Length: 121
Image (cartoon, rainbow, N blue to C red):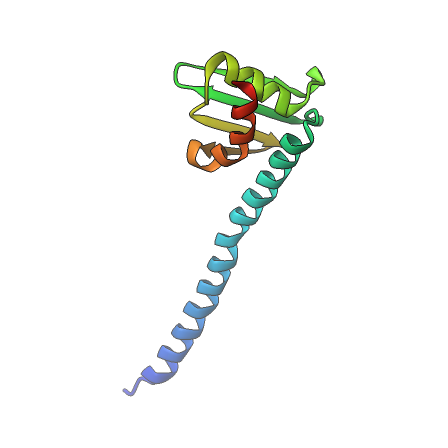
């Protein structure tokens, strides 16, 4: 009995290559979503615009958190400045944009908030 290992090996390599390509495309999608979310949040901060419907912003401080609801109508930058004045810099920021939650660590969001921190003091 003779097996054609070269054919099986080639088929396996092609299958592996197609799965690797599919996986790499899948891995890049969250980064695109994160960039889009970051852009939406930073734009709201820059414009001091209010949150849109179905959008939430939560600043997390160790033992407690404070949430901005879209219904408040206050500008995002103004609200964040007020929170920084009262509680300091949060440890995490959660931004829910059209039911997609994104969590940002301090090292990720601090550059966006540094101009606000200077104004809040």
